[in-house]
Length: 377
Image 1 (cartoon, rainbow, N blue to C red):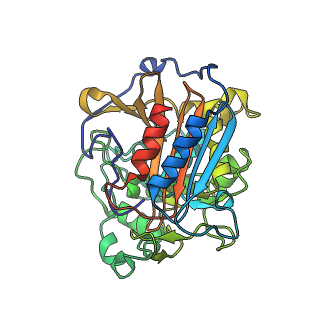
Image 2: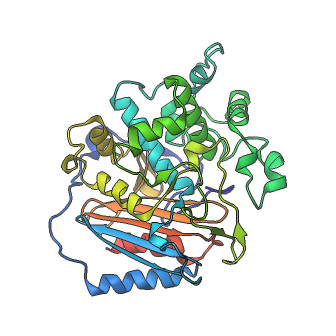
Image 3: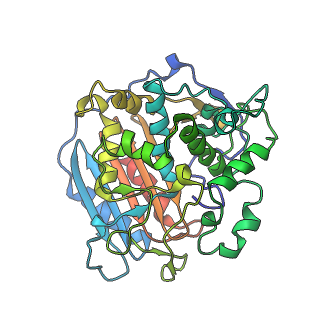
């Protein structure tokens, strides 16, 4: 989550046309294959190479295949007193995978429909437009909102290299939304928007009468036993320290300000594998038959087709790209001092969490390496 939109390999650019996916069009075989066995030495070498390629102070590549986990850590900095795999890392925009799952769950439980106008949630007394921005538009990046709200640059400029988001609190995000007039009718164009997902969080909190952090904890973190996942920094004994693009300059812990739903989640590699494994096999988890299991299945369902030939898809939580054997689901994220990549493949039963506390320049290998590792697994 930064001031610019990150584009992953093969991902269409902002503003491209899209089409919605018919529910019958998404019933392709997504089930996990039972083929495969223990991790090979070859995979271990690939993980080591991935860590080395990242060229960051601390790097973690955590992989689960059919429930068997392997975590490889390294980095250019000396090992800290706390093992790298036990630290919590900032997810940035990969936090949106938690947001999408929470919204899907609230819809499953009948607390929301997804069709609620965001304006009506945030200001019930305000007149609703004839074609309003709905919660569904916000989570699918089809609201017509820009990447960041008007006024963000001016307000965040004094802290641009430290914590610009922290200077834009919830009240400012909501006010910017209520004042904004989208250039395109909601539901007609796709444009990645941290602003839109931040508004979604405030609208859902207002509609349910519950703070965003409490909603996420009650409905997602606690049921999945993600005890080392949170929205706030706790300190150096718990959280990985971020670094700038040179890999050496310390960067303060990320303050999401009013953008909690868009990028505030921090988590350990083990918690992230637990989160991803739940997506791989909701019916086989202790949550089988629960609304959360249904939500985990629903966030794998494509809702948009985009790009050349509408080949690439997007769910309410994940980018969905094809591979030779089946689809892969992924999302990346960045703060000013850290980067993350999360993904899973039902066809191979594989989940991957890649984390490092360094903000890369364009073209650095971290995201490309993580993407390739999952795509080729």
